[in-house]
Length: 401
Image (cartoon, rainbow, N blue to C red; front, side, top):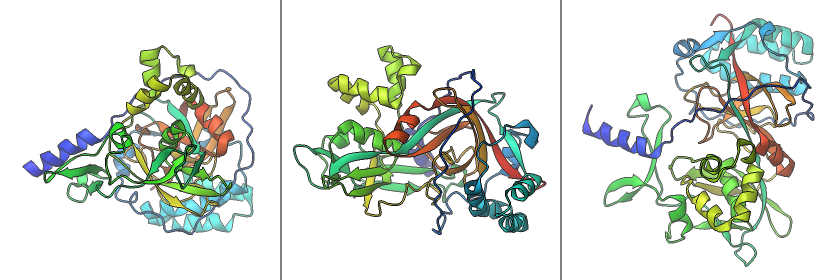
């Protein structure tokens, strides 16, 4: 390999994060999980093609175990909303498997007959158990769309900046030159004609770089930190108007879990590292809390959208659906496909449902690693913050293809 490749590969290793092994947990309760009817948002937006490059299904299937529908739990919410989503998302399958176009057309014709729809669906699709070596369980966390207090103008009350994408942030797509690094990007800045890692969280928050400019101001610095972890959210202005803060870019540094740091260095238990308890710890220990947040060098930049009625949009271009959308690792599993998860929530109520892989996240790395979208606002945030469970997952694939 040539010198150029080694240079790019070195940058890739410096700027990318490594996967962590999930904690295990045991199912102990048997009560069913009840949820409100899903809020469905359909979209006619053009779907991003970045995830629809060649995916090696031959190698992928070798890591899976094909199962019958009788071997997996039943979805607790087989309703018309799920039918809408399956019909709309069927195009993802057609991209990889053009020969199932007629199957998708038939499903669409059966959308008003739930029994016939799901009978036809299960006849032409099967669940495949996702495994990681001999491991059949992985980790499920939760995320949501936060709503934080802020302003478009700095004041004594709103003094913590939300930054837009800086002009000197360079993003290099290396997979076009090196296909073996598909989906990878290098982020950095130019110094003395060399591409070097971009500024860390601590360096960005020092406010010394004129290329990094605020687009809004927030009331609480801790809210900004967790807004960045979620990737997008909404800003409630002093006049009660709402504007959207969409993800625009990040600085390329690996994500570091401050929860793991609190467990390892401050004696907190796993039960004490929910999002809400971490917030409380930081606010109770301001100096150490600020230093703790700085140890996560990853930093997200936002852009403002005034169309506040829309929910957050996932990585493939669809609006996310509460309790039906998940984030996955696109290097391990195909994006846009239907999955089935079997887990419990923090109170041991069962969650057994179909979900769609429509988003990604810097902390979501691994074969059996899912992040469940709970919705918008404080209530969803409480649920998302408590979600840290063992999970089984199945990917739904067409038969005989």
